[in-house]
Image (cartoon, rainbow, N blue to C red):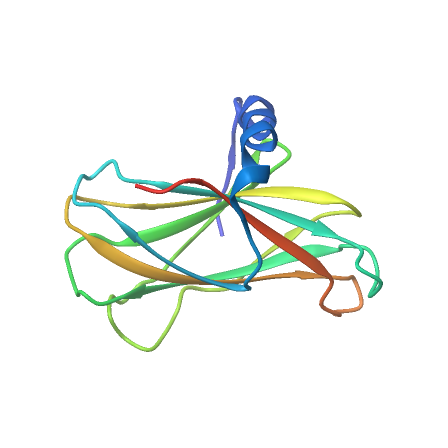
Length: 149
C-alpha cells in the first residue's frame, strides 16, 4: 500500500458531496468499464454510517481487472482526509483480485474511490467494497457514482 498526500482532497470531497445524492447505488459489488483513452477514470463516493450494527471503523475494498485481457493495468485509490491509498490487480483477466485495502475511518465517514489505468485501451473491472465496524461487523454502506468514463 502506498499513501500519497492529496492537496485537493477537501475540495474534491465537497464537490462530490454536492453532486452525489442524485446517483445513489446500493450494491456492495460494483462492475464498470473504462473507455479507450488512457485518461479514462471513474469516481465514486462511499458513505459509511451506523445502520444499527455499529459505527463505521474502516472501509475495505478490492479490485478485479476482468476481460478483455489488455495492456493497461487497472488501479483503485481510496482517498480520505487528504491521503490516498492505492491497490492494483497484478494479473488481468484471472480469477484473482488486487490486495485488499483497509482504510480507517470513524463514525459517519465519506471515502472517494477512483479507478484508473496505465495506458490506452478499453478495460472492465469489478470492485467489492464494505463498510465495517471496529469489531468486523458489516455496517451501513452507500455508493454514489460521480463520474463514469
